[in-house]
Amino acid sequence: MDAHATTSVKLEKQRNKKSKVYMLARKFMAQRYLQAMALVGIAWMIIFSYVPLYGLIIAFKEYDITRSISKSPWVGLAQFKEFLTDDSLPYVLKNTLAMSALKLLIGFPIPILFALFVNELRSLRYKKIVQTISYLPHFLSWVILGGILTTWLSDVGIINDLLMALHIIKEPISYLAEPGYFWTIIVSSDIWKELGWNAIIYLAAIASVSPDLYEAATMDGASRFQKMFLITLPMIKGTIAILFILAVSGILSSNFDQVFILKNQLNESASNVIDTYVYQVGISEGRYSYSTAVGLFKSIIAFLLLLSANYVTKKLNDTSLL
Amino acid sequence: MLKNRTTAEKLFDWGNIALMLVICFLTIYPIWYVIVNSFNEGQDAMRGGIYWLPRVFSLDNYNTVFQNKGLMTAMGITVAKTVVGTALHVFFTAMVAYAFSRKELVGRTLYMYIGTVTLFFSGGLIPYYLLIRDLGLLDSFWVYIFPAMFSFFDLIIFLAFFRELPEGLEEAARIDGANDFKIFYRIIIPCSMPVIATISLFHGVYQWNDYFTAVIFTNNPDLQPIQTFLYRIVALSGSNQIASMVPDNVVRKVTSQSVKLATMVVATLPIVIVYPFLQKYFVKGFMIGSIKG
Image (cartoon, rainbow over all chains, first blue to last red; front, side, top):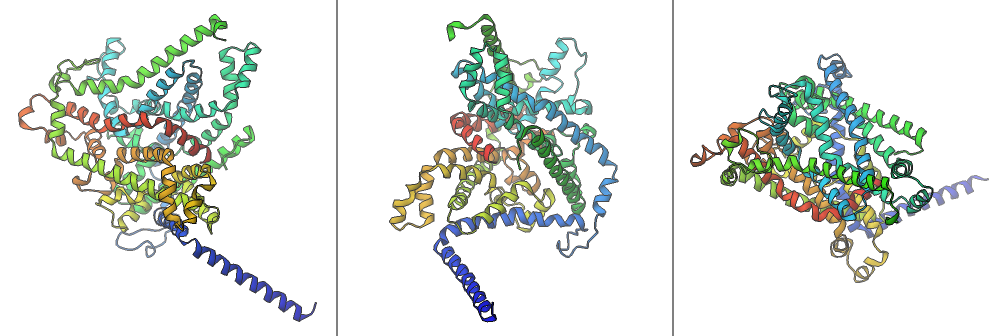
């Protein structure tokens, strides 16, 4: 091919490119109202989501309140090193992991079981009433629940009354002042609040299971328990897997609202978790860079957990989130 | 089929009904306990032992609540932030979602990526705090509204709903020369009431129940919503805050505990009344959101 032909091909390409850009610009202008509607959303996300992501760089700096983020000096990984050698790391990490693990072990399967049993109710009306009632606690705030719990667990509260009437204890116990009871209170109040709500998604999945399967099973003489655990449960295992992945990735995030309300100075040794620690050193003590590093450390581990849980469930179950 | 139920089947059914009754009782009773104690005279309630009905019925706790100025201000803030915040959140998120739902939108794929990232990554507490500070939203009512005005998760729920709307819906309006924004609020919004009800409920509950925004971003007591007011009472056992709200003429009968319970009931009642009516919507919305999200 001679030089002349090559140039003309190039020119042709350039013209095409130009006209493409031109066409795109024209199209963009023609839909300017639509674009405006989309771009205000993008602007919101840039301000409220992406600017804080940029703000994460203070984890690698020594942020000084009198200077801007970009002018503060770099310190590399010093903040992370400080956290990893800090005295509070072991117990904060232990509390976070222990409460999450308990929630995962006990709190994760219970809504599934609840959904299975609700599904077996024959009366539609009763089913609906049970569901409506079970959603109720989800709509109470953790502040209200904190109020309910402090009332129940107080010296003249119903729990002490009950246990003393049954002669299990002799003296009333101040449960929230004793670190030993904290994890139990957290896990059980979480189950109480979210049982019905967390079951919604499983009930929805169950509703889409084909009735033919149950009919066939009835013909074969399957009992109700067999139908529940050999048909319903396997049919919703995809939903279970996805929710399990999400639960595992959240293992380092405690329910901040819940812990923050029930935590006090007396139970601190069992109640301080990563999230409350970040609040305490960051907002109360003003160590911005250090607490951002702690928060970032948590997010990175959480993301790795998400990826590995995703990998494992994919291998086991052919279901994955990503 | 019903006639052929075996004994084992019947046993299962009765057992199941009983199990559900127990669960319902365990769900309702803690709330009932608070309600009956809030209607009991405060001094008397301190002896404990009120389980089913008030022992000494009294409305003094509620009188104290409704006569307290600080508490009523807090209630007003809560109502204002819930109404304004929910209206803006729903309108704004729906508008962006509608734009994102149109296939001819130039840059749509890029926009969706930008949004998806926000689902998985966040800057965390401190960078967020610094942003709010730099935006000048500390000690401002708008700190409840602007940062909560949009959510990409809710956008996905809207998207799924808009996808199901019939194609020809907008045609007539477009022929009449209406622009996209007009089409959105004249045609799309009136056709989207189920999903709007769902998101309104979700966000309304968030706005109503959120106490932490005020804890972290405001020092002004006139800006604190009812949940933050209660938080200070419950978590910081701020009995001073309550003691100061009790008027002199009833001081002997009510206690900080009994007023606290009455406040809790008042702060919860609106939501508990509303949600059963919206149940059929949110169950659907929840499904779409969790399947797509």
